Each structure stands twice: as structure tokens, then as C-alpha cells.
Length: 104
Image (cartoon, rainbow, N blue to C red; front, side):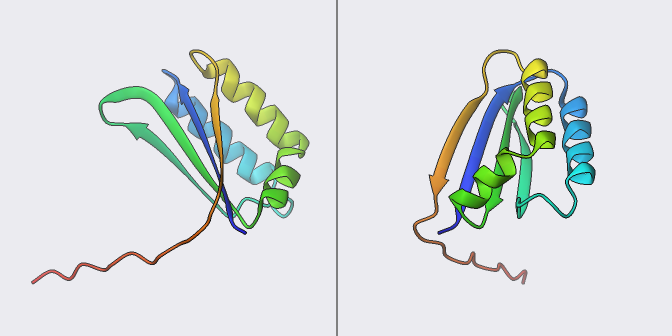
């Protein structure tokens, strides 16, 4: 079963967060089990950041979490956050393809 982890935090240093994630990607190339991730910023609150991470399974996510590089990333991200990070662990129950809009 596919698995998604959502991490929410407040930070005033979005550029540093982006740099941390890019460094992590390079450091874990070939060992990370992350399939895709999206870093977002809330339009109504530019200091609210959400990371959406996609994995093949919960077990793959836990394997990824045990990487030393992931632990270091989490510690550095937490240091940049204004308050605690909030985690949501989601099993994907169903998935549907989106629709494609065609311009006239």
C-alpha cells in the first residue's frame, strides 16, 4: 500500500530549507526510498511550509527515516522551524488520475 507523509512547520528561512532538501537528495542518491516530494508554502501565511513525501509503502518510509542523512535533515529542519514540526502519516486507500483540461 502506498504511503504519504506530510510534514508541516513554520519557518522564515524557506531558502535554507530548500538547500537542506537538495543536499539530502544528493547525499542519499541510490539509498533513499522516497519516490517524490513536494515542498509548499501557504499563500495566506508565507511562513507556513508543508512537505508532502511519497513512498511505495510505510515500510519504505521507515527505511528512509532510518538513514543517517534523513536524521540529520530532520534535526536541521527542526532548528529552522518556529515551533514543533507536525507529522501526518497517511496510508493511500484509493487513487484516481486527474482530469486533463484542454484549452479551446
